[in-house]
Length: 397
View 1: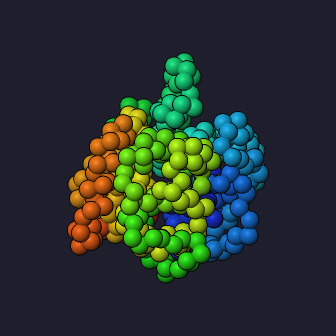
View 2 (view 1 turned 45 degrees about the vertical axis):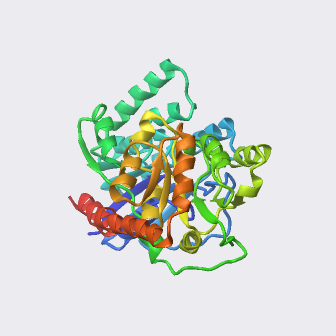
View 3 (view 1 turned 90 degrees about the vertical axis):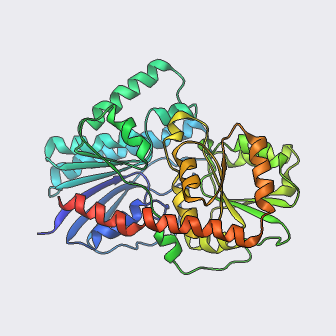
């Protein structure tokens, strides 16, 4: 008999998250999969239109009504979270009462953690094995981006998180450091389950000169992905001011901080050094990376972020390009261990600028070697074949 799996995720295809691939893996087995998600609106904050279903007939997708994230205000983000929570609450009651039982519940948690309450509600009616892949550790991540400032609110949310975890059978985390963080609030089984990026490099490259072209006389640094508060682009601004004129920055993506970052670039007379490109289809990322001399990533200098690994680090490694990192902790250590680029902490922007200037002057074979180091490290430690085997084992235990 086919195993029935219920998946909760507030982000799903066409939004670009790894849960999309997990659903593909599960649908290739003898399973019946139901995905409960919202109407896609990440990262632009507006509803995404004209997308097609890419999944097999044994996958049912329920897209619930919600308020889109909008252009960056905290009020709109809260409205987005609350509207999805309410829609999901009523739909959970419906499937618990009127649909056949699901043996396994898998939660893909980015934010907010309170979507993890719905599987607990479902289990009041039907006992199921519950697994959560926690990619955004609350409340520490909220404190790091100044969403919560009250110590009372922090303690209250922390207590709620501990209570939520206690109702799960298994917690997956994306970095080794987070295993110890979660141990402080969960007595059950915790598994290190990092990100992967095989699919991006397996896709055929799509060339589009209209979207992205470069000046080959410059050293081109490219960032792809979410332009948000957690990436600390305000600190990067100081580095951009210090680097030499033959270095050009391109930021590909959208996010809640993008408009402010563009204003800061303009107000500081840095527009000649920087290009902004809207979010592109994931199939374009390899061709964009090909044109870059180095790929950039960053995270705010906060304790909780030092224990995380940004998902784009595995993407950049898999693409085989040198990496410039503005972060500390586990992500920075991976760049050093793989010997695939340069890294510096956020507050040390002058030193980062010096390293970038030096990096840009290196001979091309040396840069290629750094990229190759990252790619080799990726396939040894982060390949999707490893993750697929692990997830199927967990489901079949």
